[in-house]
Image (cartoon, rainbow, N blue to C red; front, side):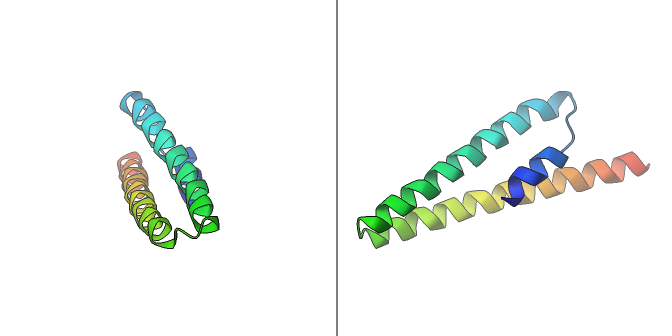
Length: 80
């Protein structure tokens, strides 16, 4: 998963450690949601599975954007 890789690249300063732990928790929830989706699909609950996939994708995109912004900001500040 790309977000796991980005989390390893994110800065780990004073404030960053707590934020990264929260993000790692969110990533774990996303992974659990995907397992739930598989279960819903196997039970032919396709609408519920689709809803869960959409919510999971949205959360994953939010995390991805946040991590990319933090990494880019850190890189810009490091160059100064």
